[in-house]
Amino acid sequence: MKEKSKSLNLSILLVVGMVLGGFIGHHLGEYPLLSWLNYGNEIGFDPPFALELGIINFVLGITININISSILGMGLGFLVYRQM
Image (cartoon, rainbow, N blue to C red; front, top):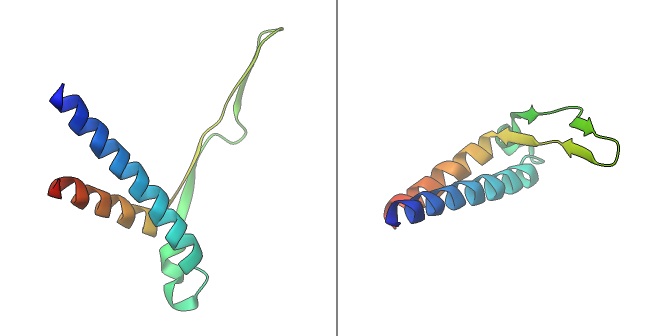
């Protein structure tokens, strides 16, 4: 049970670090000196996968925008995890 808790904590910290890093990078990337923080790529389904079964329509789409600041945020999340 303790291993599940550790894995869940690590996953949450990595996702939070990625989101916060992406948010910070998006806003700081507007300044010319810090524009390198917003350099990255978008990964995902474009257009989304659609399955039409008559009555039910199932649409699956996910896009992840990875940039330098989100990678730094994930690294910071990992460091926080190691300190816990």
